[in-house]
Length: 245
Image 1: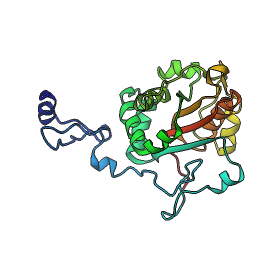
Image 2 (image 1 turned 45 degrees about the vertical axis):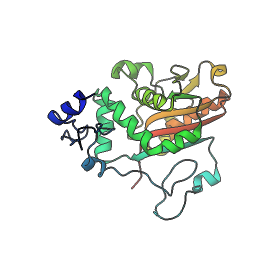
Image 3 (image 1 turned 60 degrees about the vertical axis):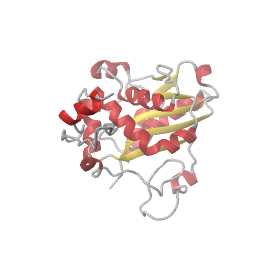
Image 4 (image 1 turned 90 degrees about the horizontal axis):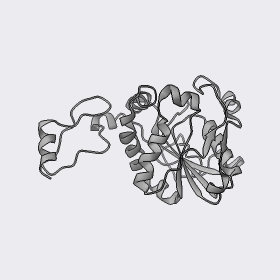
């Protein structure tokens, strides 16, 4: 009980982003979660209202209430989506190290950060299970882990909702989405996903988890597969969202 505060005073926890020491406020304080210092948090552009109530896209103005965007008005999606922050700065670096640098331990701070920022959305979704966006087995062998599965594990524990792994599957190899334009991204992942046992998900409310939302094509392809399995609803969540400049 008393050892943790003492250790924190002697060896302050380090920020995952800048590696600087995070000061502890007092002997009874708990190390901040996620372990990202105030300076780095201040450089992260968190997504705030007004947002599209369906896809979660931020509006150019910082005034007004949440409402449907033009795209969702024209073609309402089957799913809702939220992201914690914009893909830039310290957060982009953390995600890159997590995804490509083998830093599996970053799942915890990234997952906690996401939960803290979109907790209300996650609670309102009322998910029956958490499903990560799957990797193709070839890429899984190359990387050694599925970053979305690690994030889903953190969120599932926070929500006390079971994670379902292996039912939503990547049926074919797809080229990396990085570098492709919006149209090519959709074509690249079209019919790339399927559900192995539809009855296990039929009628359930699914929380779909990925690390980054860019154009939404990967999440959309996953949602199409889940919809064919007759799930009741899909709420998607990502750590970050790419914003076109």
